[in-house]
Length: 262
Length: 172
Image 1 (tube, rainbow over the protein chains, first blue to last red):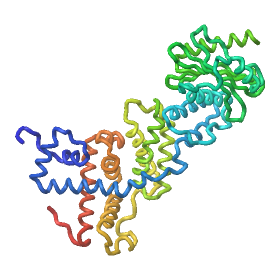
Image 2 (cartoon, helix red, strand yellow):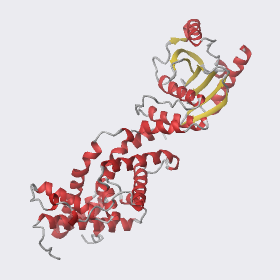
Image 3 (cartoon, rainbow over the protein chains, first blue to last red):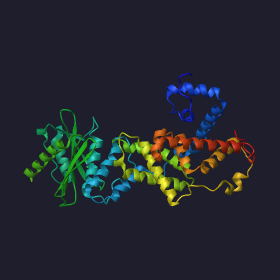
């Protein structure tokens, strides 16, 4: 053992706690073998660790009471934030971080009714994109090949013109669309697009309160960006895991197309 | 940032265990963990992503616990040993294991709070010494000395209780 540092009190703790540098381990073990008092100490400390676990591990294994349910806590926070919609939307996006990570959203009433319309819409749009854009086989219910049927169906259900915007000039072609349900029991429409790199972009249309307007607003959640606005009672959201600039170009196109049509 | 909520959720059982070891009242334990989670969600933007989320959560819990102690809202210091009901101290030992565990609890509760927290963070929650220092806001050398004192006190108590109780302990 010549040349090694003397064994100190810290080494005994680190040995018990599994925090000893591996290189030092043999020296400590030699010391313990030669020093019964130190070995007794180490054995007692290890027994304490076991006793603490025996006493308290059961608590860690108990099911969580409702007040420690994170999804509920997040929901309460969301409801409290009635003020700027950006904040509410940020909370909404925040909920989705967990959802995207496979965390189950167990709260039944995820969306607080007090949240501003744009926040509710943004939350729905982000959730929609998170769920359907990753689905390689069934992202849509009606394929772009049946465009006429798709437009007729969604226009009927939304009770207004629901044609998919043409985004081909910026490299996105339509995959198809589907009908969505809102948390208020109303209909909304999803159009899904894809570019050459197979990046998917969602355009969501949602009828809102008549004559409702909201300015164009952008939120980012990780790599996913959303641009949303409400124009005369119809909400628009563009969502994709693309930079803001790309979402902006798509949003500009949609607005121009609508302006021409209107 | 992705998955941070799931990571927090994964830490809740350990936070609860730590709180249960500090406090005894079940409702107080869950109240403390609840406040910790609310604060963590409020302050999530202050968490540096390259740092240990678990240690960060324990820091929040620790600070809440300490400030509660200061406000005297919880019984951080349990009753002195001689105030314990007869059912505990006066009962003949049934099973060694049971007795040892009870003695350990009594000894744990009798530790000064700064020793108790360090011991629990390290021995129960497996925090590194550096993380335990960060959580409790003291230098690592202080963590080591508190840990050492806590473990020795526990050892004396349990050893003492294991033998016939009133016997004087030998001094080495």
